[in-house]
Amino acid sequence: MIRLTKLQVPAHVAERLASRAERYAELLAQGGEIPDSVANGYNHPDVKALLRQETADKCAYCESKVSHVDYGDIEHILSKHHRDDLRFDYANLTYACGVCNNKKRAYHNEEIPLLNPYQDEPEQHLAAYGPMVMRIPTSDRGLVTERRLDLNRGELVERRMERLEQIETLMDQLSRTTNAAIRMVLEEQIRQECEADKEYAFVVRSFVSCTREHVS
Ligand SMILES: [Zn+2]
Image (cartoon, rainbow, N blue to C red):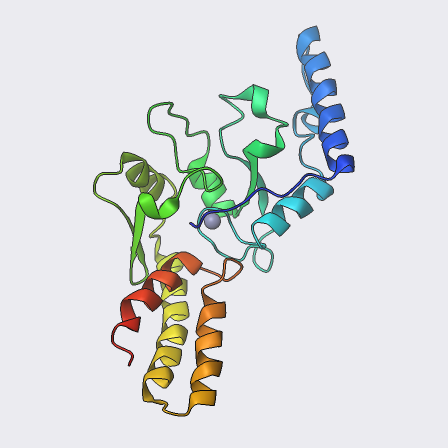
């Protein structure tokens, strides 16, 4: 998980969410059954497209690139089952893979909320050791986030490891190269691999900073 920033919501998306929220509130006030099409009215392609742009098409929690393996879900950071008032609030929406969404389900705990990548600094609660993401010992929120989302599930650790092996190769090349031009190219490539739009940037950044001290 890395820190994310909310984008400016274009007027047409804000209006769409507002009108759907209004319809939902009307039906709620009437007390009848609310059809799924209204209850899930936040699920609009324009909303999803904006969220995908925000997360660089990655799951906001596990940082897997979503679209090539999954449709991806619009996810309520604070569960809509507990915070129905935030059901249509763009600030409470993000983009997540089906696995994280499913593992998180309706988790809600006022005292120990899961980390919110838009409000919290993930590195104050979680640390990467190679391909593993562990909680920082003092952080209860790091603990529940790691456990609840199962951030060290087998296939995730395997894919992170593949990423780190690519970075390892680059660091190795960098340490063996004396040519200034080649070093510059490698440095730039390594810098790009740490950027927010890259898969598993959290573990990659940590790996690069740990191995850098061994690269002269
Ligand atoms: Zn995920």
